[in-house]
Length: 400
Figure: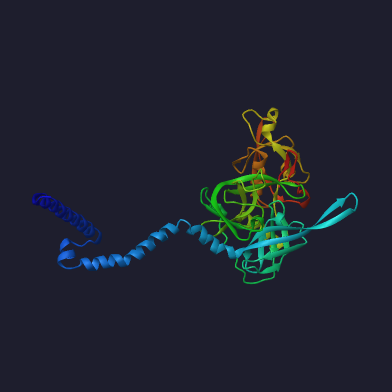
């Protein structure tokens, strides 16, 4: 290689080094806020590079924290709430009949979940978790076991209160279910299939769901105003808390919609405002109070020949219970109820749901049609008698 070509290569190399240095210096100057003079003439380059090297660990650490924040809300909720969650183990005697040996009984165990609502040992769970149990064992976070006794049950809301003899228990923070919004974070904690303190997360999928369900005795109830969530709920989660991002309990997990018997993305929880009202009744009186209007009814849309002109839906009165608030107000068989306190009534479920949100003693304004005549009447709701516990009987509904 001749001398001329060597000089050409050296020139290119030197030019590349100079350009690279200029670019690097500009980048370093931009990142540090220091000028070329400060970096090189005043000797601050070494100091700056040393500082950047020391900060490398904290920069990486900060990036990692930001990445972990994606998971922090659910972990924080679980950590806050889990000490207030209990597992419930039940025993009951089931009666059977054998063709050869005659009647016999067998001990059956069940599992469920509960949430501590008061430091002095009051726990809310589902009625179906403890229904018929001869023995209730409450298992606390950490493994401690205590015997529980039933304070009161309310099959219509599927709620029950269990008491243990203890003090200074870690009670849960109770939220406000009236402020729930569709799409917000939902965290369920429970004992699915006996797997203690399982945490699942999702969102609030919908609000104000009305669902029919049949209990172990074959009695079918209409559960109203439920929260729908896609947080995984399975057998054993029943009675456990549904929480928001603050770690506040906003619902009591109670039902799932499933064709297989397992989780399929749709679960339901009783709003905590409703649950706490029922729980307070059970603690104070041993039973829950429900507003009662006293009619059997059905969806008016099933009887198009009875609908007045221009009316397409409502709740039709099939029977009025003697002595009930409805009879005292003058409602009759065949009346079609279309409003309650200004809220449209499109079906019998609507009427049941609206009455359920009231208290005994409340006055409600009913708008209804008798034949083609539109009428209004004020009904004073009363406390529901125990003997009217039937909620569904075929297609007919009794408002409770």
